[in-house]
Image 1: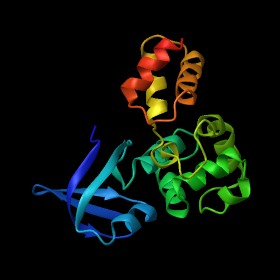
Image 2: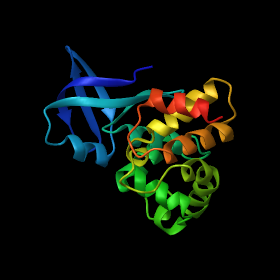
Image 3: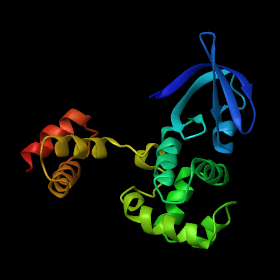
Amino acid sequence: MIAFVRGNFAVKTPARVVVDVNGVGYELQVSLNTYSAISNKESGQLFTYLHITENAQTLFGFAEWAEKEMFLHLISVSGVGAATARMMLSGMRPDEIARAIVQGNTRQLEGIKGIGKKSAERLIVELRDKLGKLSLDPATPQLTGFQSVDADAVNALVALGIGKAVAEQAVKKTLAATTQDLSLEDIIKQALKNL
């Protein structure tokens, strides 16, 4: 799997970008959000997702990790394909999509080309719980990156065999007990003591 490509932007259009990586050109399908983020840049890095179908292999590019994560959430919903997900990300930022889904705002979702009432309702039903666990405060890193140190700490504790609910409580207790910024390792160590 290609996680990202970094190089010169040889071709940039609102729908696709060709990234020259040491003489090899990777064509990536992009959203308008990604195009806006890189339109004034000559080079950079794009996170990628390789979408394989019976007829094609398409590489999608994302300026931010949050956009890629939202894309993956969207295509996990029955009836929402890669083209529709890209269209949604062209019409709304990832945090706006998350907010509309969590708040059950079908009208806002229906405003995107290719999303009807049934698709909007399906998105809300299938993603509300997943996206509801993310903070909707734009100032939090979790929303901009769909990953935060505390989420990583919970995942690490779960990987150690601790139940998710117990891990979340331990991390919350650790973070509530301190006013200083802790590293991921420190959070995990303190959370283990709080079990």
